[in-house]
Amino acid sequence: MPRPTAAQLAYGSATVIVSTVAMLLLSQTSSGPGVAVIAAAALALGLLVALTVPMPKRRRKSAARSAARGTAAAQAPADTTAAARVPEPRAAAAESAVRR
Image (cartoon, rainbow, N blue to C red):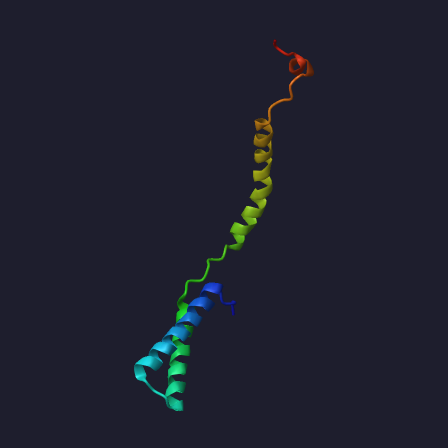
């Protein structure tokens, strides 16, 4: 069973808290069994909300393998283009000539 994401925990917890408070205020119950029924209903609603939050998509294994293979190939052209951007060092004679 996959672990719940942070979004699932946040939405589920918020749903339980808000729905419990709302149902207790609307029903105005103060008996033990009434509170227990409302708490159970709020937990069920929170679980339903947490399970319906979209899960992040997982990368396929073949996509991960091709990305790993492409990483080494992609770095070589990047290194050559970075080297092409660096200017050649100037000759010492050209730098020491001062115009007056």
